[in-house]
Length: 181
Length: 379
Image (cartoon, rainbow over all chains, first blue to last red):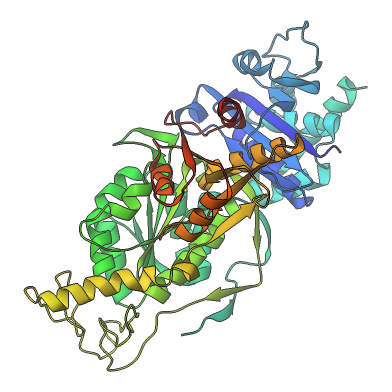
């Protein structure tokens, strides 16, 4: 892993962007990395555009906010259009296939993940689309280990929803394997 | 008076906490067992965590009707023997000013965390600022001192809240943790060790609670209910707490001592950090979140061979004037980036012989690296 990786998760409020960011950052800390995380706060987090930015490093992080993304996750068209040009050329964009029409002219690797669709059809709960996406993200980028995410889910998700979230995470990983093959 | 080491009330480990959560945990570690507050963005997570944690450790939590009541309650709790805290943001901090003066004059240990947002007035509730720095020093009337600390990380929200309690107990003075929205809401690694060092207020039976033989001394502090005759008043009082509202000598002695007990111990209280100052021609003086940006910029410019460094102020009040004066003699230019219209820059100018440039921003956003880079190119 390179020294520093910057991840931006984006979508609209209510999609669980902040929670996905919390799990990702927590997993990084559990693996011994330095992590900083900041989220949309206030009205944005509850309806309109919402983002969660996490920086991972092997060394202490001076400036804690994201400067340019190595990884962009876009769960809505609005979020995609706002942030699609703020990604490194060596970076990657993961977008929700059912919600985002990607710009194929971008000079960045892009992967479509059917997160909301799988969440609705296979898991019968659209609220875990964020976790399906997280699974695809971990599988395709190796930003943290699946084991660390499972530990983070155990720490932060209420017991009665843990099984659902773990299932969603594994579905996401399977999906990641297929699209990145 | 000596400190003691206790087992950390929170298990040793590395956590992924927000700054606000870390501050609450620092307070619990310091022995805080009383919290009174009124929720306000962006500080509310401190209150939320204190509500949960105080119940677990057998403390008392009260949601008050406003910030005036909140600070009054913690002053009362402190005189009943508890280590007490409240947290707020700009609008609430304004309401607390009168009682901060009361706490300073009655020498009441207490901790106030101000998670600063973009003011003045209600301003932008969810946005960042550091416009309360001068208010922290001069917000109440008359001549008095407080201690104000400036955390720049989640770790320091824990460490400096803990240190804030220790300083408050040692010097019997209200201590302010001047955080900001960006640090309060940042999540980051937080290391909690197995043991923490804590200080408790000194007690000496029968000794006057408001006077000492030594100049600038800190008298012992009994609590109500311990059997001592105790009077606490915000009017001028003698060593035993009796009101002396027209005796010039008693007044000047008391005002002098509550100032000197802090100013004489300035080297013990103030903390700063140097980065690359040995050979620097230019230096930034920064604090809080902006010091993170500044250090990032310094690192980038050092890679290009530019001779620039940074002095970070961990303590804002009493002002670390020795460190700033020394720096002013060593470098040609000092740049002070901050999220207000130059509050600390003004203070730096008092002590720096060299040119001082204020880089200020009041748009409710953090100062990013590119803003500082651009500014540095121009000078």
